[in-house]
Length: 232
Image 1 (cartoon, rainbow, N blue to C red):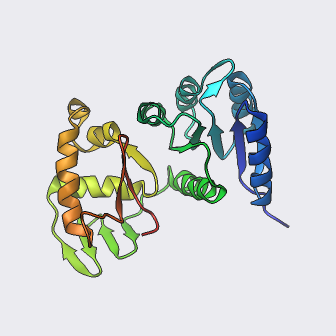
Image 2 (tube, rainbow, N blue to C red; image 1 turned 45 degrees about the vertical axis):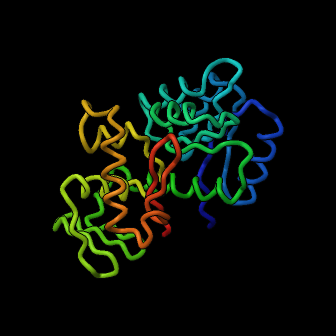
């Protein structure tokens, strides 16, 4: 008996984009339901309990940002924004509203499904027992021992560098905004002090990147935040 694929809720008012995504989802073994408006999207989310939501920001009856916030009041379902709005401000606002990722139109099918796979992995791990040991390529973080090694060699981190690395590793593959990182690592009172983050990120790269000036693991999302690659 074949296991049904994950269910994707597509909230998009542009017909051509919906047709493109329908064909792509079907060919990759996903099930899907679709909505053209925010109202329809909320109704389908509550009745179908999708595994992933693909959300456009410009909907005819409301803002996708507002809809993402409403979803987050009751649901932890991963939300991937797909939008023609490419400004940094739009990306930051969507991610701070509760979106898990952001793709700017036009985008490639391979990139879309890579982001969906990451979102599903995070959803499957949410609520379960936290992984005591995080491994990403040669990087290994033993959380019970608070030890970090790179290719078997110990990496000595300050307490803040360690918290920063663990936060990014726990969300590997997902972009975290400056505000999200600052609130988690330094606390709510430091949410706007991005200079702290730049300084510590540079120090962390010096310790774990082969070429700190050309980082391959700790990636900058310009104007938005940082992402730790989950496939180094």
